[in-house]
Length: 314
Image (cartoon, rainbow, N blue to C red; front, side, top):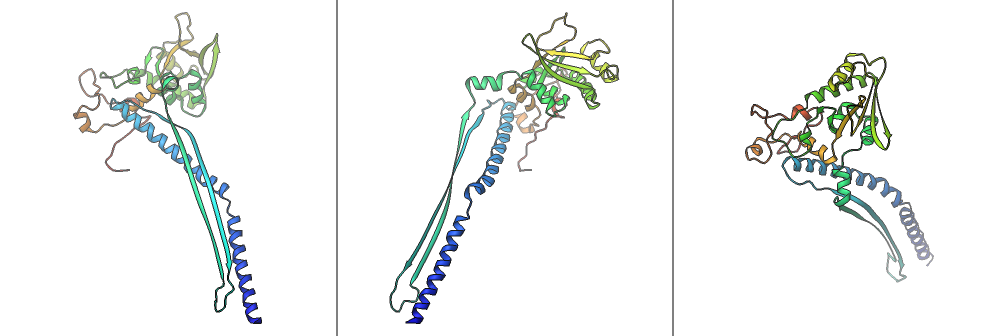
């Protein structure tokens, strides 16, 4: 009898220890912080990846004369549930060795909800069709982008210099004008590389302006003189004001025409290298030189972006 009681007590203690261990393990599960640490990064990476894929898809659509479509991730919500269950039973019956029945279970559930909204209406016009504000273009420069890249992508006209304005829409049939513009912005890049160029934003009479200033020590250097000559300004000029409107009386002003976001996408879509079979089938518009030969858009966008196609993943 004493032995039986001792065995029962031992089993009770053993089962109690296991039960405490199970509850302690369950209690140590920090579902909230752990889930937040892992799932937030996964959602972030997934949204970034799908945004890049959507952008690439729309670039291809534009090149193939198709209609772009934009879906925005408007909301991401995820619920986490942790369910715990434990049981302990004892049966005091004769000739039964295992009189204790211990059970425990835990379950973890995640219910992610992602909401999408199509970009249309006033929001589409504002975000996609409106031209880039000069303030935004200035911020791009100050965020670390090179002046050459910012100007090539953002502007289709600088003074009298055209930067493939026809590329801001469906692929043109005639070769664009762009060489003088590209050379001019390379002069600016040369000055910027030497810390001799500054770009700032201002508003005068509610009119937005970008102000380009060349340092006094550099205004008579070769790139500064070459830029002045390219835009038709006086040699040794150290300040240029870029705005949407200019007149002959405003000798310091240069008229600029920015692209819209859709115009930028059309422009960058020219960087897609089209398979020869699609060209032969007439799936894309073919741009030709004045002599009737095929125009190579790589000369315009090759230094900015190149998109290739392949039957296999890279």
